[in-house]
Every structure is written in C-alpha cells, then in structure tokens.
Amino acid sequence: MEHTRIKELLNATEFGKEVVVKGWVRTFRNNQFIAINDGSSINNIQAVVDFENTPEDILKRITTGAAVRVKGQLIESLGKGQKVEVKATEVSIIGDSDPEKYPLQPKKHSLEFLREIAHLRFRTGTFNAVFKVRNALAFAVHKFFQENDFVYMHTPIITGSDAEGAGEMFQVTTLDLKNPPRKENGEIDFKEDFFGKSTNLTVSGQLEGELGAMAFGNIYTFGPTFRAENSNTTRHLAEFWMIEPEMAFYELEDNMDLAEALLKYVIKYALETCPEEIEFLKSRLLEEEKSKPAAERSELNLVEKLNFVLANDFERVTYTDAVEILKRSKPNQKKQFKYLIDDWGADLQSEHERYLVEKHFKKPVILTDYPREIKSFYMKQNEPDAQGRNTVRAMDILFPGIGEMVGGSQREENLDRLLARMAEVGIPAEEMEWFLDTRRFGSVPHSGFGVGFERLVLFTTGMTNIRDVIPFPRTPKNAEF
Image (cartoon, rainbow, N blue to C red; front, side, top):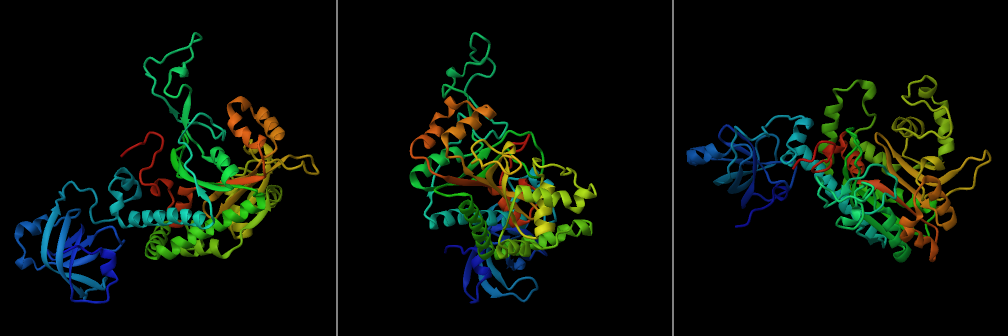
C-alpha cells in the first residue's frame, strides 16, 4: 500500500480509512504521540501509538529525526492542536537517528545556529515555509514571462568580459596556481589557459540577453550570478540568482510597466499558493519584532506589506525631484541620515530609498532619470537639462523595508553615443565588438531590467538576512555544503 502525503491527510474530511504515513519524527511524547513531518506541509500529523502492544525496541528507536513508516486508521482528533490524527496499528523504523548527536532538538533554534547546519535547516518549520515560497516565486516568474510570450534564454555563467563594471569578479582558470605560465614581461600568460584568455564567473546575463532580444523581440534570463565583493552584510551574497528580461522596441515607460506587472504577479501568486506558509512566516515575524523597540517595528504585518504592493500603483518620480524631497526632509535637516543629501549627483543610499517609500509616498516608488555619472555605460542618455546636467533613462524600483528591488534602463541604441560613453569610462571597444554589432545591424530602442531573486524572496517571506532565503549561502570565507 502506497503512503499518502501528510498535506493531503491534514485536509481530509473522510475518516476511518486505513492510511500509510512516511516521514521524519519531530517529537515523540509520553511513549505515545509521534509528530511526523514529510515536508509536504509545515504542519505535522500526529500518530497515536498503542505502546502496550508495540515492541520495546521499536519505541526506543522513535527518536527526533528518525524516519518512520506508520500504518493506521485516519480519525478525527479529540486532542487540541490538530483536526486529524492516525491511530497507529503498525510502526516501523526506516532510518534511525541518534538523539545524542542529532542537532535539531525539539526547541527554538536561532537562525545563526541554523546557518551553521544549513544542510539540516530545511527540516524546520521556518525553512520549510521559506523554501516553499521561494519555489512558488520561481515558478511564477517563468509563468509570467511564458504567458507574455517571452523566450527563456540561458546566458553563459563563464564570461570573458566584466561588461557591467559591477566590480570584483571570480576568476575561472585551469592553470597551475603554483607555477602558472608567464609572458616575457612576467605577466601570467592566459593564452595557455583552458579558454585561451582570462575568464570570470558572470555578474549578469544582460549583455547576452540584449543579443537575444534583437532576434526574438522579448527574452528573459533567470540564472546564477556572482560577485566577489568582500561584503559580510545581511544583504550580500557572492552567488545569487537574477531575473533579467530584455525587450526590443520597449522605451523606459514600457520597461516600468512590465517590471511593476511582474512584481505584482509573482507576489500575488505566492500569496494564493502558499497561504499557510505566509501565515506562518507572518506569525514568526510578529514574534521576532516583539524584541525590537517600538520605533523599529514595522507598521504593517507581512500579509499587509505584500498586499500594500499589490494595492498601490507604484509612484514614478525623477531622481531630480527625489533629491529635492530628500534635501527638505526632516531626517536630512535634523542630520539623522547617516549620509546627508546636500547636492544633486549623490548616489542614493538604502536609508534615502526607504524614506521615500515608507515615509514620504507610502507606496512602492520607481525612481527614474539618474545622473549619468553614477550609472552604467549602456544606459540611454537624455538630452542635458536646463542646468546642463546629464541624466540617463534608468529606473530603480524601491520597496518598503528593502530599498532597491529592481534596477533597469532603456539601453543606448545609438552606436556613436555608446562608443563615446565606453571611451569615457575606459571600456575597450575591441573587446565588445559582438555587443556593438547589435547597434550596427538593425538597431532599435530597447530596454531591460534585473531583479535580484533573493531580495524578492526576502521581501515576500519577511526574513531579514539574505543568507536565510538561499539554500546554501556563499559569502566571504564561507562555501560550506
């Protein structure tokens, strides 16, 4: 007889039938009550053992973490805390677990401790919920783009260019690090390397994505990206996933519309398909916030925060207007910002972004038309404004509690302008001939954006550390499991 998943049994309305449950023991109380979880639900099912008629050696092996098979009758529960339970007629042990060594004891563990045993943390209620939500969001991303006739493109993980200018990259090599081949001038000779040149792990699939958009019209990539930034904050990972669509014939406004539609779609999908998990995470967050001073607590609970994004049209504001708002703001005038805003041209920090979203507009914000100097070379340049200031057609979407969720732009389709900008920032054109061909042969206005997937999961789950929303975090000095 095949076993039934616990999620299905917990929703059962017919009782009395014989069922088989397979799962892992969360707790075993009074030699009688086994709480079993098989991963299908954050909730356990209780199996009631007839201990007088169960062999002693089996009872001893029913320990936290052990895998068991229970056969019995599904009945309506009389006890508190569950609607159904299994009245066991047979209990067998599939896999033993030494209770002295099993690190997940039936008590509250800190997230820091669980990070140290990330290979086992999926077995807790919190991480069951987090990764179910992550799964729903990933599926919804594909669903959204497929329904909108986008082509899913796999862009390379190994690249020969740091076209983003996004900083430190991980080098990929097969050279003998103890004795690499060298040129006459003493530099390492990468012609001897596997690819015949210096290569790195990618920081973005965008530039290759643009090539696809010039053929298919609309494409998206969704894959791992890497940054070798020596940063140990709660917002940084060395390996993370990016969603990066590129669209031909899209101007900045179309780009903003698409990004807003995508975010609303995937959050709504997670709310609809993971109600139990999100409710569980909401309660977890409320509990966690009790220990914070009242001023630091969120005004909205998790479900309200998610609905806040769905219910509001995102406010669209230029960088120039945002700087004026921030300059006049109370925290700036009272010198409460860590980074004071006194001049046009400053790169906005997370505290400024959150002020605009949470205090000023009280809704998600799309900031547009940033100063050219603080943005990437490929962004389309606007005509200089009345003060002669140069801006680009960039857009960043800012969310409550998290700051930047999306970064994107209309791309510079004019070859001469693009070449001039590349020369200004020191990107050699000869290395980028393949990219420049998109501007030589049938160039069109086009746009795209990137969503840091872990940031999206962080927002949707209410977790506060990005290491808790990716299965195996890669951070400085840490590449475990």
